Amino acid sequence: MPRKTYTEEFKRDAVALYENSPEASIQTIATDLGVNRATLANWVKKYGTAAPNETPSPASVNEAEQIRKLERENARLREERDILRKAAKYFGGRDELVIRFRFVDDASKTYSVKRICDVLKLNRSSYYKWKSTCSARRKRLMSDAILGARVKAVFTTENGCYEAKRITAELKDQVDHDPVNHKRVARVMRSLKLFGYTKKRKVTTTVSDKTKTVFPDLVGRKFTANKPNQVYVGDITYLPIADGSNMYLATVIDCYSRRLVGFSIADHMRTSLVQDALLMAKGQRGSLTGAIFHSDHGSVYTSHAFQDTCKDLGIRQSMGSIGTSADNALAESFNAALKREVLQDSKTFMNQLRCRRDVFRWCTRYNMVRRHSWCKYLAPAVFEKRCPAILKSAS
Image 1 (tube, one colour):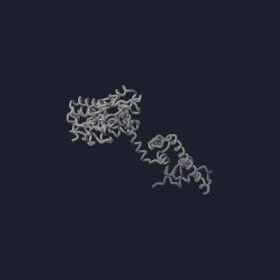
Image 2 (image 1 turned 135 degrees about the vertical axis):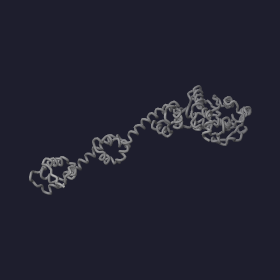
Image 3 (image 1 turned 60 degrees about the horizontal axis):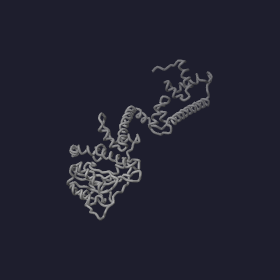
Image 4 (image 1 turned 180 degrees about the vertical axis):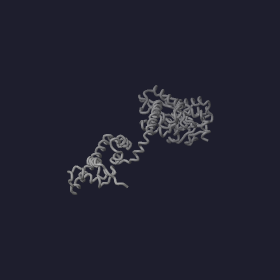
């Protein structure tokens, strides 16, 4: 192999490169130039800043090398300080890994990625993976923003009463949109700080009369039925008014579909209140013959007048245990949902007229619009219309 020869100009340029690169060692420069370290050292002795033909002593050579090493270390520390200073300003007090990767990406035009990751104690492979997924992440963010607008529209329309699963069911019924998972809807709602009302209000309206007839429990906490118009539950709940008075709501709910078949609103809690609710149910169903009506031991339900009404309609009465709300849990749950979603942050209704109007509106929406988890997130009235298809698919 022929011996390499170098021009005088090449040798002097190599020495100048070494002397003007304080951060690099003589070995690094020699490797970059493709020459032997000893050869470059000889060129430095001959063409360097030392006087011509002057041979530096070993002590001076070692001292110069130490100085260059200190200069390289100082340059490295200055670079590290500058990276940390810029990073501190960039983070602005935040310490999220994604933000650190974004800083690396922005600062890579000034410093090497390896150097930045070393200073910030980051894994380079993680940064490159983050960078390679930027496009997909941007698309996902755009998709989440569009979904968030749809979720917020449903949430606002339902007056903040729908949670993730009900909103998902509502979105699935919208045309020209891809299906969406309720877990994703829940995540988007959390990011938008949208939370359905979950407050519960403790209410006591049952005044039992121990002298009246007590009927056996024909339901046994099994609030289900094979078809509509078989088993009903009912209760009375009070509706507080701002002036200190109360309105009262009596309900008749079908256990099959959770449909509110009958209800009555009045400013009293007399027997006629529950009779009117039961008569409305008869008008909706056409006949209640053979159906079971389950309630608590309230005096209006044990009264002779109500018993006579049940006999006239062919209804069998059923009652749970005294002092146990779980024996009429379905009716209690309905009352809690109504109070939670209509009153929300308010403790009372403005007046009796406003109370009647708001409760009536909610009760009608409950049957026709409001999605119920029991009904596979359909409204009770819709569930009853589709029940043959739903039962067939379930079997």
